[in-house]
Image (tube, rainbow, N blue to C red):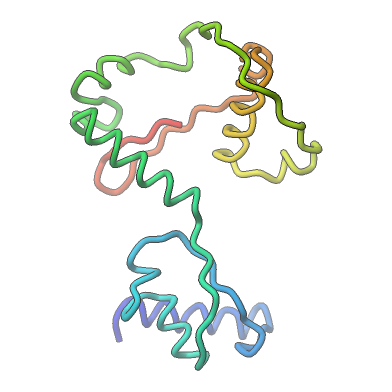
Length: 165
């Protein structure tokens, strides 16, 4: 068995044993868009469909897909990384220090957005919550008001490419 087949078998076993969900009740599979998960012939989702015996709706995370595109764009324009936290090229020069400690530039208000209830904001992941506060800041024209709500996460993926959010 391939690694994808083993993962599919493990997922089915987990749902059956711990979630007590019959395969007949599974309608949608959700994942990021990597080929290991979504390969049309040998992806985990395809193997899950084969085990269940019917096609399922695939829900691919669009935020993850957008992040991958932005990562490639940044890598193209920056020339890649020179360490776990350094970048090459002109963009690398612009972000060589901690951009989160720079003063906030004045900008023109672009429109407003209704605030989410606190429990909804609390349920958001850190990326989505940061995006939410960035949208509120841009809409209000007052980024200073939200600066304490914005977080900077720095993670490094398996190939050593550093992400800053």
